[in-house]
Picture (cartoon, each protein chain N blue to C red):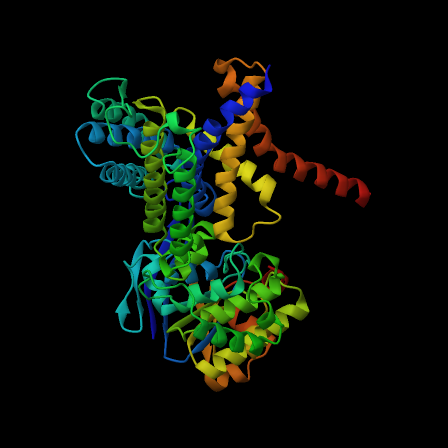
Length: 305
Length: 264
């Protein structure tokens, strides 16, 4: 257990955290802003990775490929949104349906292969894990920080516009939103599209960073996203009130998550047990508000007697 | 201004919970009418208001607001004609958004929402002025989340939002029922004041007979999904509670349990 080993792993963990932080910002839009639990993300992040990888291999410029990943990601959100609003299927099931369908679609995109290599030796990529510890403009952490800040600024602007405010109102109170003339169905679809576009973009970055796109690279993505959202809230909720800062908290939450993962791996946890650990930790965080409310209610009752 | 033409609504048809909320409602309001609506539990008052607002589709009949047939318009499209205040103070505002954001949402009711900034500094001044009229000190708390306000403050804010742009039709659905008596009086007189200034056509449901008599120029009583009493003008001004019970007994053909009506 040399500390040097841990420190060596940290730059890569931070970069990975930043990528998943982008994805978690997408999750935040559905989970916190719209109050919809969207499970599409497990599929759409892989879709984003697959689209970007295949296009880059096909000779596309890396930026165009990422833009294409974003657009295709929006289409996955559209599918879930239409299942939910047009077909009246509960949101959580709609997401599961799209996610399942995307598994087949992702295999098709990858040319019926489970994974496709995207080597930085052959292609001009934006980021790669190989440069995680180099100093300079090719360092993925630096590029990802700029990327995150840019995304937060764009979202801060968008949610300040009339349309963005109507999305916030849709999440806060559907009845009120409709009474103010807001088409809540359209807004839910729009929110799902925006969210999954961002998630797919994160997938495109992840495929470049790790040097391959894999059909199952999104397994458990929603849980990692929730972990980032919740860690960000637990750590920063008292000081970050502004919408932009709340998004920043999500990104930092993801970085903290990956740093903690590095530590537990360094302490000797089997990699295969990671998802079990993550699920338990997220369950614990999600249960805490419920337990606290119960405890407070019981305490009140006792005092009342 | 409002024409409710033979509308009917049955919830959960064909099941054991089947309930005919509106049997056959016929009601016509002239521009500027301020109509109070009373009736016991399950008389169909709220259902009628929600049918007008488009919360659910109706089974039969038609609804026209200001010359436009809205029978098949979804709720969010009808909103351009309506100002609404609900019984539950939580329903009318977005708790996680602040006061000025809520007002800005109401200000854009019926308009296209694009990528312009959601709230301008010019309208902020206007909101401050409007809020100060409420006399609740909300004008100095415009950045506060609405979730931090009391029920009465939220209802007053909802009322202000409903009338920020004078609606063709103002729908007040027992909007003081969830408040303590003092606050209820304040919100009610505030409503009356705004209605006198702006003259929107108004439907106000109340469970309080005296309020129904004191406010408005016309009174409607509902029973079992129908309008059974309709009094207006001079006749309404002279109305007493005893008169009202007499009218109801005659129309409904049964003894009116006034406790049920008053306390429901």
